[in-house]
Amino acid sequence: MAKLESERELPCPCCGAVLTVDLNLGRIVSHEAPANPERPELDHAHRILAEQAAKRDALFAQSFEAEKNKGDVLSRRFEEALKEAKKTPASKPLRGFDLD
Image (cartoon, rainbow, N blue to C red; front, side):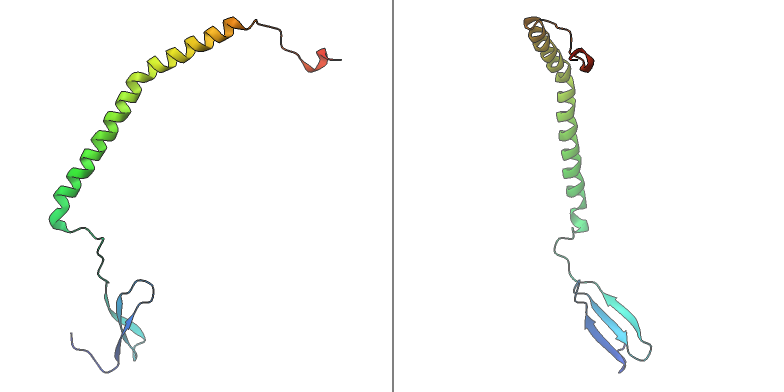
């Protein structure tokens, strides 16, 4: 696109993009996005998707193992609490009007 005399290229102070502004119209005519080194290349999309799938599978396997062992952990905690309850005698709880 041919550049007119009334057009000026200005860098954006926030993102570093280059804006072409037409001074006669008072509008932005074009916009060039800045180079982003963190943007993944489409050539590596298959690898990125495979890595994300492997991460999801690993998290699912970890969660599955935790759920399998959850019953054993809860039963052990219940048995320990039952032993503690048998050690201490059961007493009637104090209520506010019992203290009067």
